[in-house]
Image 1 (tube, rainbow, N blue to C red):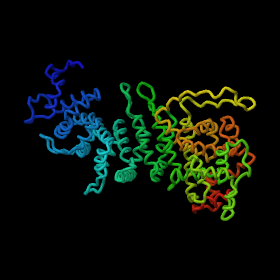
Image 2: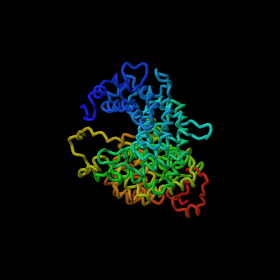
Image 3: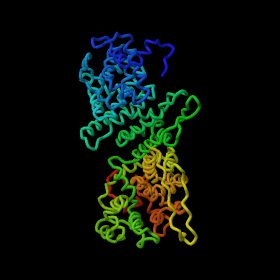
Length: 593
């Protein structure tokens, strides 16, 4: 806004004259109408300062045609002048029109054709000592990947194999930026990779490219790099300006969440002792990172980062070759004893226990005959097209076409569940399930059980949830549903007001969150200790009717078959279940196994 004391009047006039400044950026050529008085790098730096002021200024500079001139200058200047030129390109790449110009390889007089994306890979490989160069190049790639066409161009080079070394040389160059001393470079690299491995629902070619990128990421050690970013956190701490460490943690966690469905990724996370599950749990449970800034304050982490780490734990506790939907069916069966009454409870809004007691599954024709004897309201309600997804999934869990259960697979998952619980994940996950205003106890029932006249009070419009809170609810509830198969986990959930929190999540707008909360409550209902908690939290009647304290339920039988073959390896060997696939009804018929 004002002329610096170190700048001459002549340069100040040039600084504010964009037309003449562009000719200096172009360098000596026949198209210029003025004499060049400053270097191309200094002209790029001055344009960069203008572009950094406002978005309107960036749009104006792009419309002037500065991007091709900056790319040409980036190629022509000396190595120590490159950061100024690529910094200008990075700043302008936030504008959509600039991204199209950056990937355009057509020649623009007086400059020949230049492939900017390929040039950046080559320049970054030549000069790894310049952090400023690395930050600007990786930041430009990150902005380019926001545009679908530009992302395809970047991914083409990342997937390219060198003919001599037979390696993905450009991809290896990119991976080095995930080790950068700059948290900003690590944050942009993680975000860029997250965009590249994102599958498209409409473009099969993009989906195929994303799958190849995921395979490359696993093969070249991206999981370890992402865990290092999450564990290392904020290596850059400055009192004068905010650090990019929290952004790096968030982007790395979200990228790891997208890779987590791959079994090899799960194994790598589990194999890392301090940087694996403990680091994820630490991020989930701490709103501030332990590494302080120089002013003594902690670095605040976002809900998106904490939710993504919870999502990774949810995938870790999922068996191989099972989708989340299939696993929800398996977890929801509870030895095929309680879900028929769960459905009846939904249908009838139970005030009295369902007649008929516990349904005990049988095999063959006996099972088919028993199927006909189930409560008619439950089966009719579950088959109705108007029923909720929770009820339809629960009904599917009762069918004989449920996925085959591999006992060895479930045993491995139970060991993983124990590892997650031992890492102290329950309390941090519970903190994600608590609403912004805190848990509020339900209103007491009036004396006599009748509501006072006067109608319902109108509820005010609920404030919107903070960004990332819905994802936090879903992933945390899903992981808690999984770990609730363990006795010590259920005790921790109860002591952390888990019954009240899960009862509140039954009214979530997200179907999967409601399903997880319902499944967690049904599992908690296996224990006699849960009765008082459910009554206090005013859990739905159909859930309370299924608790172990009901006269129709026996806690020792309702206990999940998966928990029974869990961490106790001796019991598994004694039972003879050594990994052979067993269908759900047959295995459920022998709960003692």
